[in-house]
View 1 (cartoon, rainbow, N blue to C red):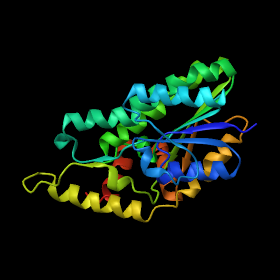
View 2 (spheres, helix red, strand yellow; view 1 turned 180 degrees about the horizontal axis):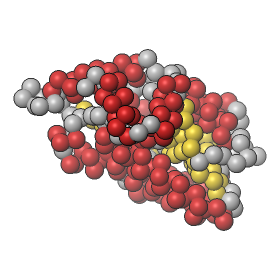
View 3 (cartoon, rainbow, N blue to C red; view 1 turned 135 degrees about the vertical axis):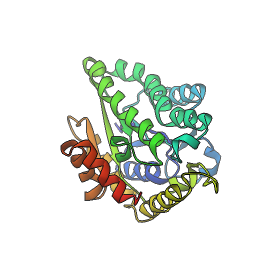
View 4 (cartoon, rainbow, N blue to C red; view 1 turned 180 degrees about the vertical axis):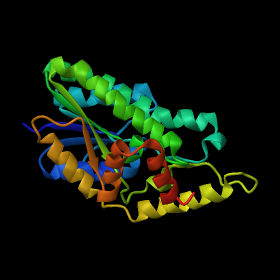
Length: 267
């Protein structure tokens, strides 16, 4: 029997790559999008779901369970980027980012847990970010929302261990996707004290995404995690320096690590 997989944000980028690979490997995959009608030629079904809307989450999960009688894997992939000086990002945009990157995934998890508990099996994979391991300049809100998801996964794992439900984080580095096009950019204001450093950092960030790894590397990593008997708590997928940056943060004094970031972003 094919394992049933739900991928939020499965219409493009990393989510689409994961869905296509798993489909070719024999999984029964359901992706989601806020506008599923745009993706009629998708290799796997795309259902309507907005992670900021609890009704759409519950309805989609119900639809899949009614059709398949089970749900084996949830991949919490839907997310949104956000950049800007923290002082200048409107509060509404900060809250909207946490709704998508933190509260949304929690609500999807809550919606699948009763079925997984009934099955006494299930795997939940939260796609976070290497940026969630450190407070990055002009990406502080994104770092915070992804870092929060990393931490809550650690707590969830211990709460779910008696039900044979496994949970893990996968933190990608920079991947060549359209995330830059979809993220909220605080405008570079001519009269802003942050105009020059923010402008330079934004160019650097976009260059990193453009030169990022192909999304199929993430798809392969997810496939291997699904097939592992006992998934780790944290995985990192990206180039060597991105993964190594987390190791450095662990071993270097805080101020020295901060200096490395300042030099990297030419601040």
